[in-house]
Length: 291
Image 1 (spheres, rainbow, N blue to C red):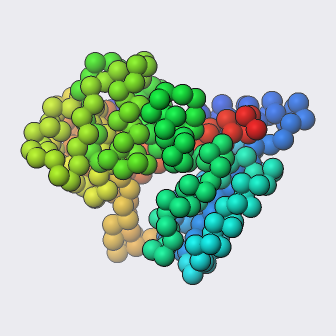
Image 2: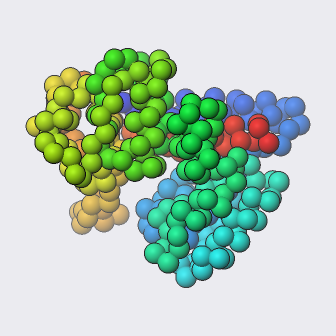
């Protein structure tokens, strides 16, 4: 039986640390950190995420602003909104929630965000600094994964770490962070993806398996080594007519099959998800202190 890595509990500890920092700022008469989120359209999952971010801001004492734009918003209108947020001295950091509608070029929007306000850590300048191990905004989900490992006292040094997925939001940055010469790091990292041959052969060698493949319940029990640490980044709404909401949340890992073999595993929900939000708020705190 695997030990559950409780992302809710660990993220609450981080949020408490952030709250204490905000109280110090308030006591010294400083400006509260202010996070803004831009949402285009009405994607259900995106709406859930953004609302959770707004609630987390309230919890730690941040100011927050939600800018909800219609699906039909033109690319130039969104870029104009990004420019306004870049120029607004009240806003310390902001995110533009993805996915964006098809007619908007996501990379163009990311490139337009001021790197020091890019609390998602996706700007090319921030990703480049991360590659060079310079102080910067680290993407929120990879940062959250490293904090989960660190705060669960999981030894990563010299371990064989397999990352499934090569996105610039999770897979690629987390592979860089895990190979770094740091206490939580120093792993030997293999990145796998949809073109990898003998995928199960590679994943079943992993001491630490980080799954960000974007397919519900893709990783089955036979793909995992006994005693592995399994970090499931996926989150999918799967129809569940018996539930009031009409759906249930599943990860990229077939939990019931993998959990008995793993030494540690993150649940979905309640694993990586809350850590992404905590990391985003931590990035916002850093941005407010630097500005």
